[in-house]
Amino acid sequence: MNTFVKDNWWKVSILVIIIITIGGWFYWYGLRPAQIKHDCSWVKKHAGVWAEITQEQYNKCCENQKTNASYFNNLNTSSNFEKLVITPSCFCEKPHAYRPAIDWYEPATSAHYSFCIHEKGL
Image 1 (cartoon, rainbow, N blue to C red):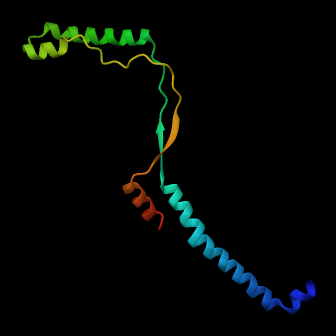
Image 2: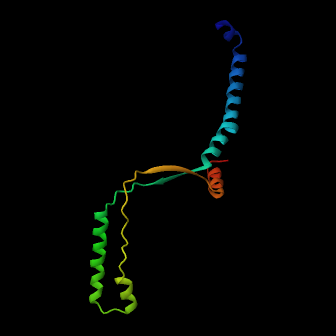
Image 3: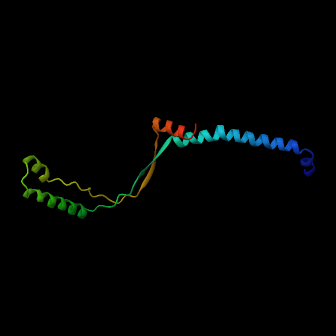
């Protein structure tokens, strides 16, 4: 085997160059575009952590809003503004359990897909 390589070194080197060229061509025009199209077809979405809100925390938040609204009762205001401020509605976050952060994938829109393909050079 060693004498074959020494006697035919130019044939072996041409064969290696051809194999590397064909492999590079297959990667650049076959595998790379397929991987880019796959990656651009999906968009990664993320939702952060939801901290737990208990009923007690919700009640306390609503009470704070009511005390802030009572401040406006002592002011001379127009009746429409007074009705808006004094209405008994609570804008606090409703009680819910803890939810960890999650990631998911959604299909890409055509505009996002086109931009991604162009950005990655296809």
